[in-house]
Image 1 (cartoon, rainbow, N blue to C red):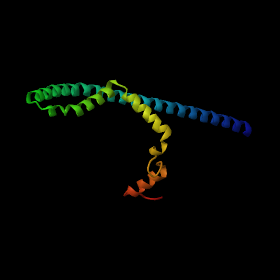
Image 2 (image 1 turned 30 degrees about the vertical axis):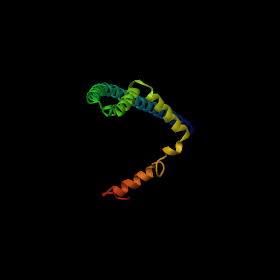
Image 3 (image 1 turned 60 degrees about the vertical axis):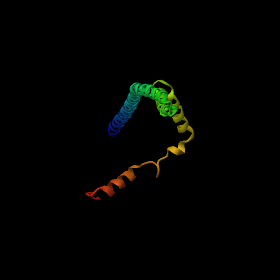
Image 4 (image 1 turned 90 degrees about the horizontal axis):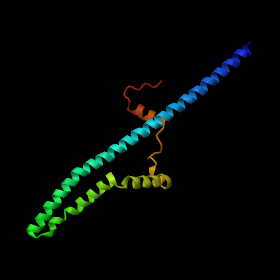
Length: 147
């Protein structure tokens, strides 16, 4: 009688463990999907910001180019055109970020770093552990009581 009851309990426990494992996996998958969705939305916002900034900066560069060119012609000093060089670099960068291939090139370089330069990504003093966090918490806590 005890053997039958024990066998049923073991079977029930095994079913509960499988259910818990399946539940944990499902929760992890949902978290990963949610994190990816958030990352994609943040990237979309960054690209949208860059495109919007480009409109205003492009207008500024156009007005600056017209004004500086007019000043250079009027005063016969080509030095007035020199500020257009750094403005052109910034404009080109923003255009490449918003409409060009800068993000794809950055992604490729990031993948290269992850594959071939793993040592540059290591944290100082190694990975954070629960023990190191607890030790830091205990050192900072004024009300810590060690049991």
